[in-house]
Length: 263
Image (tube, rainbow, N blue to C red; front, side, top):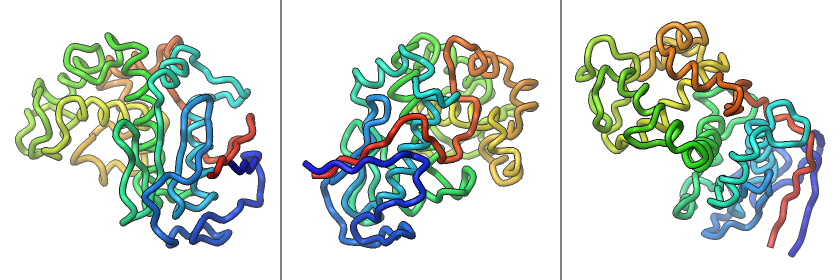
């Protein structure tokens, strides 16, 4: 087993298979996850086609979500222990190389664009899903559980105008709703996952420039709108004991060394 250690602030990044220093991911597709980084016990893995640059970027974003004050210690011990016990994982792949293994969140290289905001850069969303779905949902099932009956689900029901099914056409949502996810493949639990993502990132200010773009799905694009219209979700996210991420990662994290382990 070969180990390469990088400080997250390092300027020189080794290229991945099929990619140069610029982060190209158009190499030979591989069905196996050839390299990984441990981030506070959470596994961030990549197939051989994934550049080291993008794998390290994903690991940094994960670390920033878990350690918002960047002191080298995860902010919520219960959350981290839950994620480790559940073997929470993010697996990066390339288009045409297959997705993540069952139980892991996938993230593709063509949707990972360092330096971009949410929308062009899906890394913010998919990595946050790991934290909430495999972390908060199980650490605090009665509050953050991504299922019917939890506190956050009850707030989502209100945000959807009382509708409690899967995705449906936006026009079918009741008047007064501000969350109207329409993908029919997204069931109720999935709807909760996306609701949390919208609330957390909107409070970070990450959606404020996308108000018109995302209004069809989510109307509360700014911190002020979340605070005034979805007071329940706002209260949960801002409760200090949960240490829910409040700052959007920038992909620069140097509080702990990040180590790529390759076979």
